[in-house]
Length: 76
Image 1 (cartoon, rainbow, N blue to C red):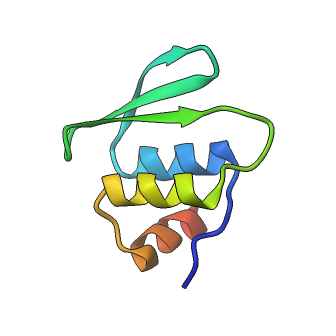
Image 2: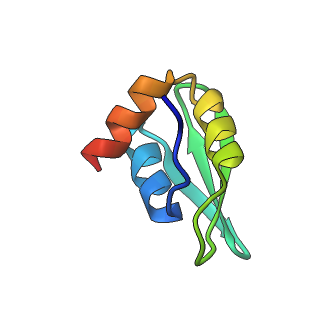
């Protein structure tokens, strides 16, 4: 399965389902903190879709398989 290019709002919903919370906003980036992984994840807020490579790297930081990520994305 391939990870699609998604909108920033969709990625934010996935992060919130993984119990990550918005820590702050710096310019056009929301900074999320994920206490389970103890990681900080920046999410660019732009009018266009996020590139597949960026979505893939964020998925890897969350320690999610592609199937689990797509399931969370579908539930949003």
